[in-house]
Image (cartoon, rainbow, N blue to C red):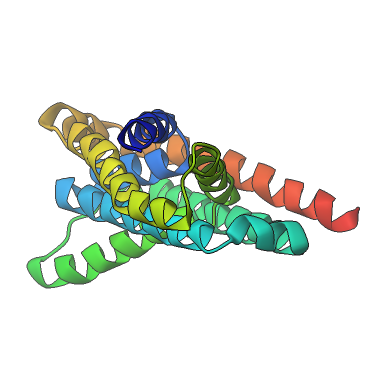
Length: 211
């Protein structure tokens, strides 16, 4: 079982390293608001990972097979949320202002950053499908729902490590100086990528809704 967990963990880390909405949320926040804010988003992503692992352990795959409309709803909701993040990035680009938090505002903002990371994962149907695939792999290797559940902390820790590293990289002195000089370019770029992810997800949900 140790070997099975090790292989599953390597596959999980490979999936987490791939650029996507999680990466964009962490990178954009770390650039605009600093390292602690980026780490808070990473912590939210890790929390969302644990959320999906728990649901998968208790039969999410079966539920989605019996009620495929839930996946359609998740795609539409996830698409709308990513489009909302795109609109926020576009607004920040229009203003052309880097975020400057006071000490009193920072605590509230960190909670908001954590919520952003959590929502990006929870509303992402690809995250659900990835963890269903991981659970299927564990089941095929002789694991049970208990083993899937026990894998949750490992998946969350790997997410924190991967996205925490991204938060650190995008909050270095070189990165933040570049952001200060070209904040509009960065914000428009992130907004465009969020918009592309969100629009595709939303459109896929609408197409499935019509069939």
